[in-house]
Length: 258
Image (cartoon, rainbow, N blue to C red; front, side, top):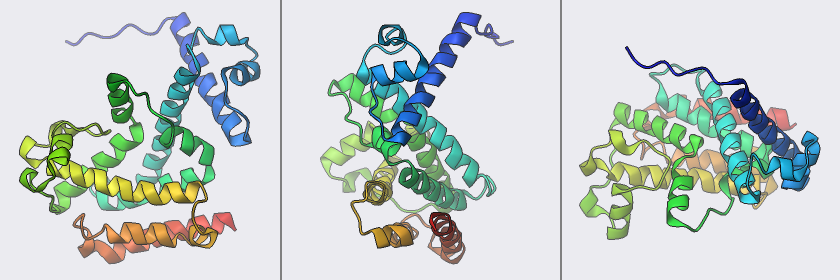
């Protein structure tokens, strides 16, 4: 019989509640366009800055905590949206999740920037940890793996990859469970990287308004990017159904935006 962990103590529950409040207050400040700082968070919580240091040691620790938790909360929202489709339909789930990611990024540009455009520590160990723990990345790459299990889309062999890329996919610094991928099949990780770069690139342009606003409103660039990836991911045979799902999601966004 496995060991049953002891329930959290009252002090532990209070500490966890304080961390939750820190993240919630930080999210409010970001949404309001206010500066995110230890002093601002402490003031909103009715605490002194020194008291807040018992929970976050410095500004970077605050950013790391808030970025991780906002990413985790947002991913839970995307997963809920995607679960409108059954577990054995990862293609539809991936389509909806990508649309939900875009929707969240455009609605929350400062939170998006904190999570996805925040400078990462230069120390090797800290950088690796920061690059591999993102909840969103783990969720999306897991969906990609499920798609691959369904469609068996092609990926390059290790011998076909540039030596630097070969090294990177064999010891990847990305948020993904690569333990389920055999060493000789790690070319699949290169597909993870390339497909994420494509989706992230478009969403970053849109969320930061570095794109024609008419194209953002229409969702045309985002749509073209997802459609371009149907064939590489082995989903071209399901193109009509998946583009219908995609178009319905984008129509919903346009209707909400007015």
